[in-house]
Amino acid sequence: MNSTDSSGRPTTRPGGRSERVRAAVHRAVIDMLSDPEVEVLTIPAVAQRAGVNHTSIYRRWGNRDALLADVAVTQLEEHWPLPDTGSLRGDLLAWAEAGESSLTTPRGQLVMRALALSMPRGPQSGAGRAQLFAGRIHAIEELRARAIRRGENPPAMGQILDQILAPLYFRAILGLPPESDDYPQILVGRLLGSST
Image 1: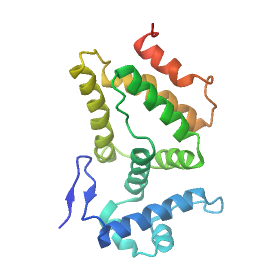
Image 2 (image 1 turned 90 degrees about the vertical axis):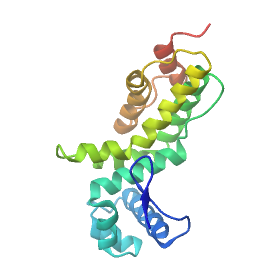
Image 3 (image 1 turned 30 degrees about the vertical axis):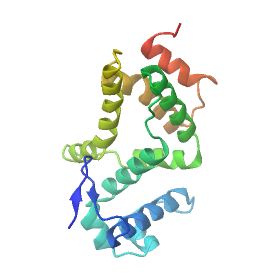
C-alpha cells in the first residue's frame, strides 16, 4: 500500500513496480525536455516514451503540471542537496555554490524548464505545488534549526529564499551568467553581511 512522504509525494517500497514506473516516467520527461524536436510535452506522449499506460500517470500525478513539478523537485533534491558544514555561513555558501554549479549544467537548465512549464494556472493548483516543495522547504528549515542549536542567529526563511534561491533561479531561467566568479559569496555576504 502506498503512503506519502513529508512533501506529499507518493512513496513506495524501493524497487517496486510503482518506483520503476516513476523512474521511467521521470526519465521520459527529462529526455523529452532535452529533445529540441519535442514542441509540446503531453501526458500521452510521456506515457509512450516511458512505455507505460497514460492512466498510470494520471492516477499518480493527476496532471502534467504536477508531474513536471515532481520531476523538478526530485532533480533539485538529488543534484542540489543542502550541506552541513558546521556553520550557517558555510552551509549557505556551500549550498549557493552547489546551486550555481547545478543550475548552469544542461540538466539544471532542464530542471528550470520543467519548473517554468509547471507553473500553476489556477488558484487551486498553487496548494498542490506548495505541497510538492514542502520537503525542500523543510530541509532549509532544518538548516536554520541547526544554526540555532549552534547559537547562531539565522535569517528568516523568506530572506534565504529571496536573497539566495531567487537570484540563482532567476539567472538560470533567463540564461544569464553569474554576476561574477564569486557570485555565491556575494549572495551570502548580502544576506549575512561580509565575513571578517
